[in-house]
Image (tube, rainbow, N blue to C red; front, side, top):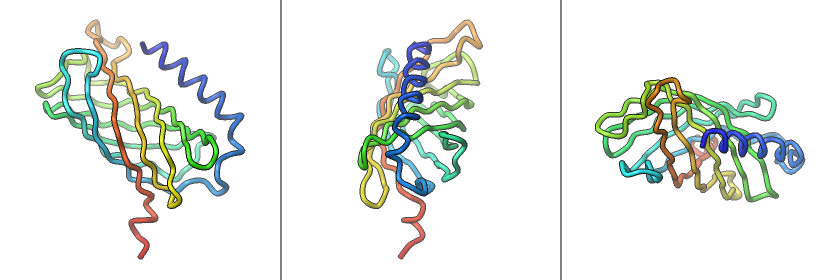
Length: 170
């Protein structure tokens, strides 16, 4: 599964370099992103998932740094930092592959085998006039075989990205 997600991530990045001209000049602002979803959709230890992220307004080539925290209804938690790459399909639609290593605590939830876990995902979002976004993300979380126990999990989330400029304007 990790190899498939890595191939999708790479393909979307390559596609994105060809579509870079559709990005809005000046880049996007920083965002606060929050939402929730369904944790462990591929197995029998499902739970609710809630997350909060800060997406910077920095540009590292085609990447944007992010930091976040995720928690589930069965007390699992994940703190992470990583990168995203926005690919604009016209003015309204944004596809964003993302990757983030982090620290995982299973609480009463699924044992993913290691404290170090890697998150790789793909987001599809609709971009509003004020640059806020409503999106859906599918991501995979696993330890990349750092441990013999590496069950991994898939998560689907619905989220809203609020531009930081909206928080400080009238």
